[in-house]
Image 1: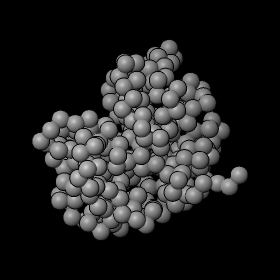
Image 2: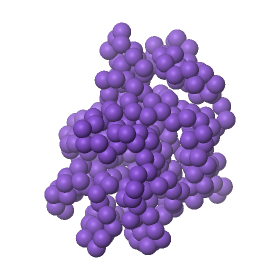
Image 3: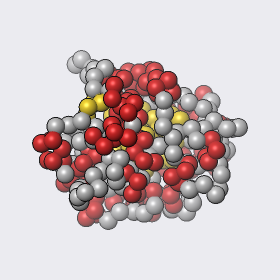
Length: 299
């Protein structure tokens, strides 16, 4: 069987969809809308980040399935609960309960990947390798990406360790300060590739007094995105699915860069909310507003 075109293997979206500062830049302020459905018309994946803070109820997860039911290509990726990756207090039963909470999404075929995102303080050592081994076993059979922010993991031994466990190395863009992980283009399992773009806000990245919005307030320029276009083009042929998630969310910048990156890959204009074009004129060369009828349907 012939492999699908490279662009058909790539899903591009944002980390989350519910931000107050997206009202105006992305979502209309004049009326109440279903924000998930609205955003899902412009991207083909969304990374669930609320799952980092709490385990969702089954009813909420079922509603997510229903709300994107008419979008056959759309997929979610699930960011692991912080008790698993940051606090590291979740025992095996707690991890299994977390996984089970998403069974409505999994049964509907709407989970493209599970993301284990670890903080910069998570260094390569025997205890942390054991934790990755344990979590990989608990998630066995599922497409799993591992985000490692510290540079001690950037070596062939880590790539081999992940490959042996069918885990994907999550390539990231972040401010490269000291021992931080630099940009990479690793593919450690043929089932999955993953890229996360956090922005390059050096002034606020490690400042404990900075807010979340300050830390992720960054807009990539065309030159910076072209580097990730090249890395995506290198990873995509080696995997079944590649997810690219923009996490530079403040004031809708994640959607701006997601649309720009998709336009680079497809060489065609993409639809975006007209309010976003007004706020970010650099979109005018790669984006167009939907006609008024389609826009009203999305609301």
